[in-house]
Length: 498
Ligand code: BES
Ligand code: MN
Ligand code: ZN
Image 1: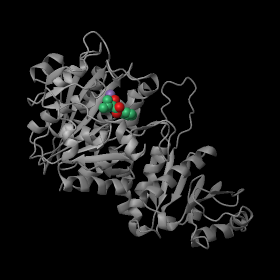
Image 2: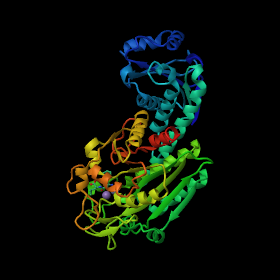
Image 3: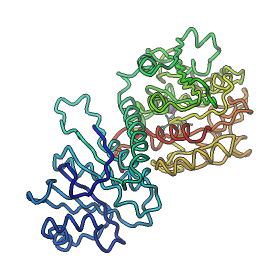
Image 4: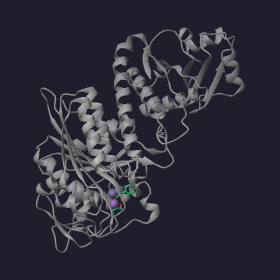
């Protein structure tokens, strides 16, 4: 897809369709749309009246120009109430616009960003959000379909006021990289467990490293054992697909900070001996979402090249029941010496993360961020669309939450407390891998992780069990993997590490 920023008059646009936006509060068309209306002998305003188009959210006014103008269609999209018009609304409008173009099989169209300029958002951010909405909303996982839809957008133009053109060009470039990296993550997460095994995930990390010049180290079982990662190894043991520990590094010339990103990388989670019932096992191919998000973030920073050193760490494994599987009541010593009593083999993610967090702590980074499809309890607490955020440093938590407000990747803080700390005390080891009650399950999982992080290092844990995938699709997310939280973490890396 070729993307251009333009600032000429709408009537001169050399595209097949011009798509403009109209708020409920707008009592009339923009001057430019009025000009177009005049050229079209007033059919835009006529159809508006006829169809009682009032700018309601997502309503579409489709106007064929019948050879009277340069483009074949003028499309006005209802933008709803101006009060609710934040950047994520703009992303959704980008998605709706792309869908409208697709329905008409139009592969070259213009989105009128200027018509959204009366909101409180900057015009360059609006341009970026429109691009993100189009690219994210056009995503399909159709690799395995014999009959593919061959529609593709050839050219997308984003129109802004002339004085914002240069800035918008920069933002649009960033938006394209962010959205395409998020789609890369979606592609990986949507691949099933028979295709992406831990070994395969390591190969993908190696390819990525080659493409962008990252350093990468892959450790096999023997090396994992040598490093003392027994908690991780316990989880991996029951699978015929061996584990791989992935460490990928982006190192610019003079890094201002060093950040470690950890992603939960369960290529499939059957639950292990505490096997999941059938319905709960569906979508557990998406238990590698955190890991795939880390790789997507690396794809983005490989292109955006921020001035920070970034370490990506993935303890990839498959959780399966078998003769060699770890069992309930097993006691295991993690890499940092903490002993863990197993209450349930389905609480496996935190065991793989435990050793990954100890490993990351030894790198002495300025911050550690882990992302994990860790608990069903987090989905119960916040719903399917919002991630839970916890950690040991309020400032870092606030920074991530702030960025998430702009990216539209919804996140909400969950509070640690000493009473819940009691819930993970084990009878015969330093810690249990489950809480003594179901209550606060997302938090007790976070508190478990806390035991493996160097207290001096600011750390944030993002539980993405809800929003990492969606069985119905929502907004600009088609069914399946969403690529959450690639845009938030990448934007955080660019903006908050100076
Ligand atoms: N991968 C699951 C969590 C999950 C659940 C992700 C639903 C996405 C959607 C995790 O490994 C798990 O099984 N957690 C258990 C923990 C329990 C045994 C303490 C859970 O949430 O039920
Ligand atoms: Mn599990
Ligand atoms: Zn899991």
